[in-house]
Image (tube, rainbow, N blue to C red; front, side):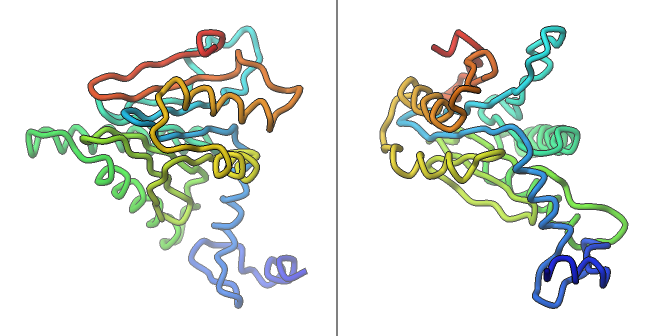
Length: 231
């Protein structure tokens, strides 16, 4: 009822307008968009980070590689998104440019957190200035700067570091399983198996191994797997 009243009073017309209860409705609408997107799970392992993503494409005419959501940012950073894929593409390109600028300027690899922070800053700007909508995308960044790390950014421009996390549809259910089943010190193969088993539990009869892509980031190496190669 409150949301309907807020809409009638125009509080959802711009991302710069607060509702009386302190909410920014355009930001909340964008957060709902993320939960309509296909899911991804990120898991920090002993010496690697594993990301498993549901491609959710079943059209046999689509080339699988073109629908892969796991993107290389630098030789030690990968990212995946949930939400509006075109929004994610813009931010992925921005992250790649930032990584290369850092290498040219400082002659060293950028830290994962510095790239995540800069992308989060861009997302925050679009919740504060008029004339543009917020980015309708949540992103997970996996990195290796001496040790494996996993960060997630949200609509508002906040970011946090995680041991394991999920974005996209059914994220609450997936996180519940992660809290119960995640263990410190897992190998990458154990992390991959855990992510797929959780997807099986959450998706039930809709689970199909052919829908999934995985990125395994270890020191000096990014390995991608898809479909039956995950088993």
